[in-house]
Length: 142
Image (cartoon, rainbow, N blue to C red; front, side, top):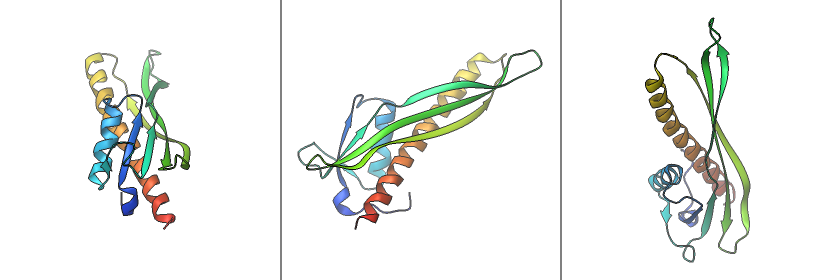
C-alpha cells in the first residue's frame, strides 16, 4: 500500500450488490485507512464497482488412505472504476489470491475454523490488491 492516492481520487462511491457483506466492509475499511472518503454517488469523483467475492476449494493431494491431504483455496473478485461522467477509467479487472492448506480429516471443526480465518486473510489481500491497482493507476495519470 505504498503508492499514495492523489487527492481527487480520495472521494469515492462504492457500488456493490452486497454493501454489508464481509468483502465490501473489508474494502471500505482498507480504503478508509488509505484516506479514501466514502460518499454518495452524486458527490463522488470516482465510483468503485465491486463484484462479489468468489471462493473455491479444490483437492491438491491425497494421503495413503486416499483422503484429501491438502487443499487449494482460491478467492477472486472483479472490480471497475468509473469517473463522475460514468466513463470507465479502470475497465473490469479480476484480482485473485490463492492459499494452500493441510487437511486433517480427524479435525473437521478445526478445518472449518481455519478456512474461516483464511477467507478473512484472503479478503484482506484482495482489497489490498484493488487498492494498490487503483493507487498505481491514479498516480500514473497525474
